[in-house]
Amino acid sequence: MEFSLLANAFNKMESTRKRLELTQYLVELFKNTPHDIITNIVYLLQGKLRPEFEGVELGVAEKLAIKAISKSSGTPIKKIEQEYRNSGDLGHAASIILEQKTQTTFLAQDITVERVYETLFKIAKLEGVRSQDMKIKYISSLLNDATPMEARFILKLLLGTLRLGIAENTVMDALSIAFSGDKKNRNMLEHAYNVSSDLGKVAHVIAVDGIGGVQKFQINMFSPVRPMLADRVKSESEVIKKMGESAAEYKLDGERVQVHLKDGKVIIFSRSIENITKYYPDIVEKIPTAINATNTILEAEAVAVNEDSGEFLPFQELMHRRRKHGIEKAVMQYPITVNFFDVLYHDGKSLLQVDYSQRREKLEKIVKEDDFVRCVPMVIVKNENDIEEFLENSINSGCEGLMLKMLDKPYQAGARGSHWLKLKREYRNELGDSLDLVVIGAFFGRGRRTGRYGTFLLASYDEDSDTFTSICKVGTGFTDEYLDRLYQILSSKVTIKKNPRIDSNMESDVWFEPELVIEVVASEITLSPIHRAARDVIRNESGLALRFPKFTGKIRLEKMAENASTNQEVIALYSGQKKITFDAGKM
Ligand code: ATP
Image 1: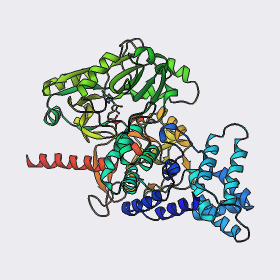
Image 2: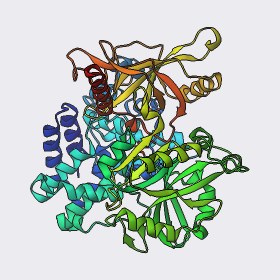
Image 3: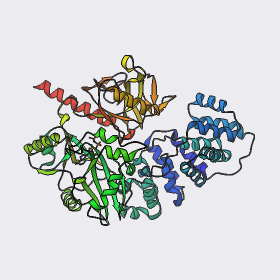
Image 4: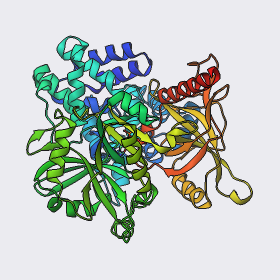
């Protein structure tokens, strides 16, 4: 397939944010795509080469791309940098430079999607001393044959700056329309995506086998299932009202791990379906003998423990394992227990449709409890007192609160719903919940904090526009150790210009790539003329902001920026808080 067809589609999609238009462009594109490359087209549309969980990163730095543009066009590096500063986008700068060049030269050869994809893939896989030179060679050879518009998108793909704002749901709508006539089969596609986390694969199945193929879509070992999530509740009575008799489990404060075990091979995925096997060599080693099954997918919370007392330790302890080197040492220093709470697949059969009670029964049979593995403590609760008692126990054991689960409900992959509820102790005061926010900027500190950042600008995630909207500045709750750590982590994320996905009226001393998520609590949410979260939703010309925010000590390295608190959640918290004031006023 000619790459120009894809570049044209990208170009059209870049010019709109309207979901209906985007869907139409996608439908057109899918209809014109040969079936054997639809998988790769779907990855490219999302700015990726493979599904997220395979972790294939292009990793081309701007400097290297500039060298490649220079090599291919014969333009001095300084001139390219100047053009980049003018346009703010390197892909755009490249197209302007190549525009001047193509007036004098011939294009050697048409480029195809297959060729672009293969070259990008080779670049992603290159490692070692000569890799930089090879990357420049590959990129410039593509640019030599590309039209200016094609070059623009090749560079955006390489640099990871292709932001078409296409949500997965929009891709599924378009696939459903293109290959089954209308949107009504979207649910089936969604199910297939939720059990595989691989939209490219789902696209291939519907293109080749039609909707019948999607219907038969099964869980595959080593393809992560998208996790089921919980709604929050504020009180024991709310749990009883919503669920009646239910299962209560400790809500442990660790990292969610989805463990795939087949014939002794173990792969571990995180909550955001990243492959995190390398951080848990102890799980890989011990699981095959600790589990009574050879072919299974289980979910657990890995929690750091004090080896002597067996006590659970807070989440931050576990995050010490997130390092590039010396994992073996970190494993010794920060021992864990693995606390299983669900089984999704067993002996060749999916258990997603099976009720919670039966899944739990199966889990208890499979897990051979010892010091390292166990099932999460669970009791059946019938009334508020039962819940309160178990909540006390859980808090006293160092947990965050309880997870409440409906006994007769299946596992809803990829959904946050009311079949699971979470009750945390701190929900009873102030805002009701902590927020996970993205660090988008910072201000240099004074006095004791000189030489580091003293205050941070934080953002919530706006799902509709795929942007990060400023919501508060935070400067309290940070120990010196945390300020050092944040300075270190954030130094690799500094950008020259504000990333276009950041929506903020505030100026800050430095801007960052919106990647790092930290947890804050606050006293309330207020309307704000400056901050951009949920702008114009509650009141025109106003956004929402946090009042008296405070860092809780949690740097959430396991969360991606897109997993941060969304504006929908902020609006819900704002509305909940208004109701409380209103009710109090009536009394
Ligand atoms: P939070 O920020 O509160 O951890 P979340 O957005 O990651 O929440 P939720 O569905 O809201 O996800 O809360 C469930 C999380 O709690 C899971 O992702 C998991 O990491 C953790 N957890 C701890 N104990 C349990 C349990 N017994 N059952 C399910 N999840 C548990």
